[in-house]
Length: 445
View 1 (cartoon, rainbow, N blue to C red):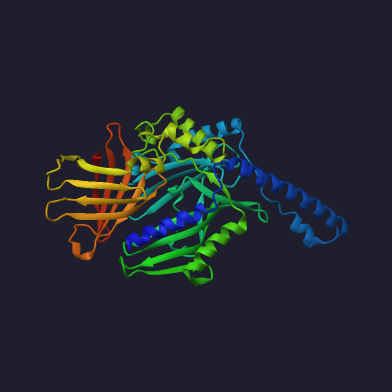
View 2 (cartoon, one colour):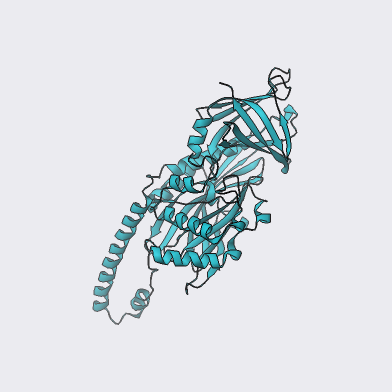
């Protein structure tokens, strides 16, 4: 089932990429909001004419008294600096403690203004691969602009009883649209969920912020149940169960009908192997954090491209995007060393536990364990980009293979300064996490 599950994840990511128009998000956003402001002005003029014609209509007067939120296209530099200082003054409220951060595969921070009210929002969260689950806190500068509010979450639509928090860090881009009827900005995030290793899928979440609340509505979802070869796939929208074709049509037309623009999210992965200076965010000084948060917002505003952001704040060969990392990994590699919780083992070609790895240009991985030992075992998987800068894939062995695990996730995380390809592995048995290892491969061709 896991192969099918990750295929659904890829389908969701590819479906989202259909709407991306490039990296000029700032220009696109300003144009759109500018047009909307002009439309609003025209609407106000029309309303004034109607008032003159029917001054004694109390219902109409009440309707016109409702004020739509003012749209701030971009927070100016002086205001942004002051707001970042407010976040830093309250850093103990939002920084994830190092002892908690270690419980997650990655933790992340991102500054933006998701409701375009001129008061910055800070996303602080973590992602766990064991259950493919995210936790997310969103903080906002308060109305008095002298402190920070933690926003509440509100869930609606499909699976609302499960309170599905979207995986906002899966992609460095998010698609957004503006509802002129309510003056509210909306963003489309995906939530890759896993109930068990034979039950999972993808939810599509429409997310907006209003009245100190993050509103998340799941408007479409897929679900796959069963193991490889006997999966049963189902698809849903707000009307109920639908066909697969109707599912992708529902996702596509939700996007097209709302006129999406693309926004960049400057995620900083501060407590993972991609950490900028090797320090936990909790231990960083205020000047370091101020630079990170400011540049993160500049990504959202379209004034700083994400590759430049990564060059500044990714530690291991940070100039490589996930796609570039994968391209550099293409070829044949032999296992050189493994590290399992500090237990380091070195390998030679004649070692019975030696492995050969082939990374192919069609985004597939082929691993041969114990080649020539009489009981060699092969692993094949499709790979995809993950938002934390790694490249990830999943493998489920056949039930009769006798493996000690029933699911393995492999992530390509780096080609280090010694030229070694660095992979991490995580395994599960009966939905219980079995631990992980770091593998180092040297190029053999």
